[in-house]
Length: 106
Length: 338
Image (cartoon, chains in turn cyan, red):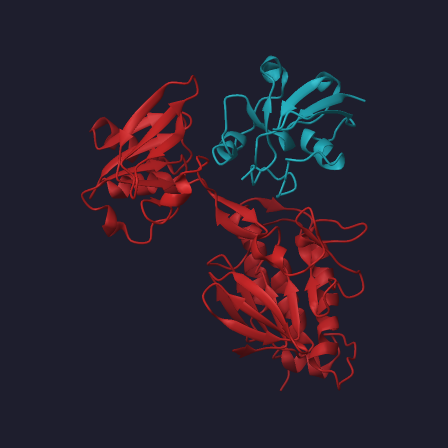
């Protein structure tokens, strides 16, 4: 299974195996990784599963669908490497992905 | 003090159908919601998005679902208290005393929390010092635009609210508009208007900037905005407006002595009652083994919680299960029979 590394704001790093087809958000929620709220449950409607993707991964990820950037406007301290983790579906290509979790989601 | 058989907190789909079930079995109920409109997440988050998993409704949008639920409540007289947040729930003998932020109070044996993922609150700026200017020279909504007359107002955001107010306030104020990227999302006509006003020098536009800090003692004198590549600009301004949509906060519910884990409230699956007798939780806000966060689950949970309310609201009567197809009692309540 692909491995995803989540780094929390206080620099706690956790690498977990996430099943293909789940999202990076679901991987965090199922493994009790703190800092990803996912209030809307993956509907791209709340921007509380916001993560910063490590720069060298940015171009390897699926491109943003219409609406993701609009939701990121609402996120807490968005940057150019911001993504909504509910929009990142885990596959072999994402094996080794590292995401940083912002200090808060709201 | 308003007396009622059951008070529902939350006017989303689950709260609405729970109201239907309460009225159908002959109980009174009142509904409180923090938003100024009925519909909850369906209206606030996805009014135009189609939903495909409502039983017997192949496809409908959040707005259509809400309108259908409101129609289904037509036979009943239900009082909605919108734009009010429940702040306090306290035990008083057999009743709960519920108070809202507007000073309304209710006395009821049954409180049903159908609060989704909490109450919607405006999303705020990140610099800490913003808090001390909030509602004085920094706002997340406009109550009275007159205060901005002849002043400089800096508006943050890229959606309809930010753009509409930027256009509107150019008539009476000096307007700065700041957004984190070049693209805006808003009605095309508004976008064109913003472009036009920017070219005419009526809107001072800064894109790819975000708020870094706010300066001033009692009121805001200037702000610093920072670009992605670290460049900082100082803007003189009297007022700051932020339009970043709404977020859901569990809010005061956290203080009512309920068993809360990860923003959800633990309930049993017979009555959907919490650890407090007479307080129930239904819909997205409740959790139990196997919980699905689907609208249809909220309907089921509300129907059962309503039956549980009957026992506390009518301790001397026995609840009898009846079908709407055959029961003359139910048909009377539905206005289908004299």
